[in-house]
Length: 276
Length: 275
Image (cartoon, rainbow over all chains, first blue to last red; front, side):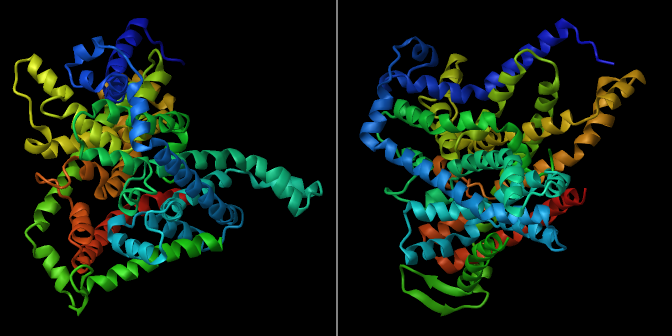
């Protein structure tokens, strides 16, 4: 029996939902508005701001004065690099745990998860020191390694939950049809695993892009990704609302779009499969 | 499986052993370097320093405040978004958006564009009603921070609780309805028990992340006005005042604290593995 919903009730809930959603989204909408204003206009009252002229000037200024694209590139390299490296390391692990589970599989999975809960600040100095000794402080490669390691448990877990859903009978069927180990991997398992791997990549690029403990503490001018670059606006000089807004919009826009595509994976990935 | 295990083992053990090692030393990299073993002195000094208990209080207020706000509002929002509404997809997208904003951006945007006592949005709003604008981050620093962080985490709670609500068997609700259960008792006796597990997961995962909140404080108050959490205190000891021994002892406390929470979380997640 489907429940009848009156149009009036739907209208009321819709109005409430849209109001709440707009309030929650408002700060993001507002920086978008401010990014299209001049610095002089951006500090006026909200009504005056909406009535003033619109301009793309701030976007150009941010790039000119601060070499924005260098930091953007750093973010891309660090987020994508650490994720792909993590996938490379995690696929074999998740694969064997999902298809050839042993008595220790459960223990290993739980232990991996527990490393994710190690508070970063507790190991800040050792990592800092190791980075100096290895000469990788303020380098992209250093960040790639650290971010790969902090996200590795999530990557292994996500891949494991996806792989486990691939029915073992399919493998048997393929074997009965005379498929060898190689073609089994190539033609049967890989196509089935690709959606799970893609989702894992998506979520982990987002997490790495927004990571703001190690990126702030392990970089300076050279390797700073957008998180650290934006933080440099915390000690501003003069008028900067429009520039900060423009820099922020460019920093969050790509991830917002990716995030909207990854809603489902987000739940699965961040709850380690506890809520699906 | 070997490479992943070896890497994580190294990532966990090497820094952990180093932190433990430093925590028993008087180690000041800029003022004499390694000044020898001091036993448990750092551990005693860390907890007896005048900034320790305020930091504990700050941490508890942030974690507790954000948890209460995000869970309560999260349940309300999830129930709302589960209703039939026009443009459901777009509404969902708008509600989830703050979670994807990087912490430094949300910290700075709230601090400058909204909470600035002269040019901020709230200041303009207050003046419209003839009220004196609030010095948010200096006079109401803790509520401000709790608000900023709640804004970031509300989408997470909402999304997970919504997913849980949608997995609820509709027939169960209809049966309750046919038996004459009012909306409130349907919520209390059918929906809430079903959500219990998801709420536990939200609380545990958020606690882990909230205990190590850093960037939001770094770009807004930098630990001033009573916003120094344990994480921030340790960061200051280690990198700002370069008292590595003392900071490492604090780090060990933080690790122990996180592990207590982790044990509970692992138990909940582990149950799911057997299913």
